Image 1 (tube, one colour):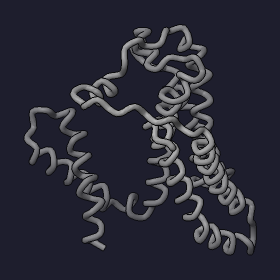
Image 2: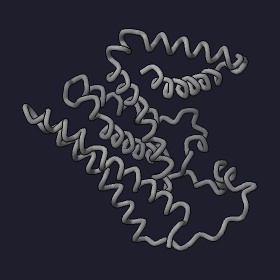
Image 3: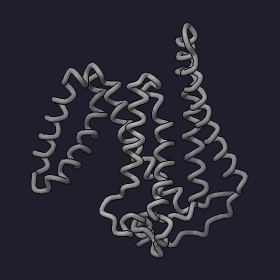
Image 4: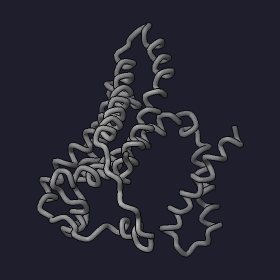
Amino acid sequence: MVVAGWTTANPTLYRTGLAFQAITPNWPRWLVTLVAGTITTLIACSPFVFTELLNFVGIYGLLLMPVGAVVFVEHWLFPKLGLSRGWASRKGLALNWPALASWAISVAIALALWLGGILHLFFLFIPTWVLTASLYLFLSRLAGAGEVPPEAEPSPAKVARTEGAPPSRPARKRNPLIAGMLLSLAVLSLLACLALSIWVFLSGGEGYERALELFKAWLPLPTALYFASGIGWAWYTERGLGP
């Protein structure tokens, strides 16, 4: 158990040290690692974290998950809906209040549903993600995200990938049927995961335990299909690979 935990603890401690070093740039690396390791060890040994680990991790994920929804919406959906990425900084806003408001409202509603006994903590992530994404789309458009023209220059990440790289061969023509099949499989797999969760939630009484066991047995299949088809779709469409 201890040896297996090292594989998770070491990279986690490394990331924690990097985060601490961002606010303490003059500290040596060994001191940052020692301080971060001491603090996290004390937290891990505290009774609250030890006895309420699942709830602790669930709340931690619930607080961070809306941030991912905001990033996903701005990076992937904004260009398709006529809105501009990075609109808040280019408008000179010191604070992206639509993002903050979307996060705060979604987390407040999720906590109210959990503490009120309406939804279990583990079932809150998908509705909270959807609520955050919808709120951010609405509030960003209201704040003028569509009034900022798109950036004409490529992003720094794209420049970094292309600078110094050898000329790439022309991308082969993509088959939209293959891309559509991969995307459809990914969406159907995600819907299957959602349907299994709803089925367990609606199973009451004596049927709940059996439904939960079947849920644990069958969930890995649509999960694996989702990741495989999603990665295949992204690789096929974005890199221009095809027959």
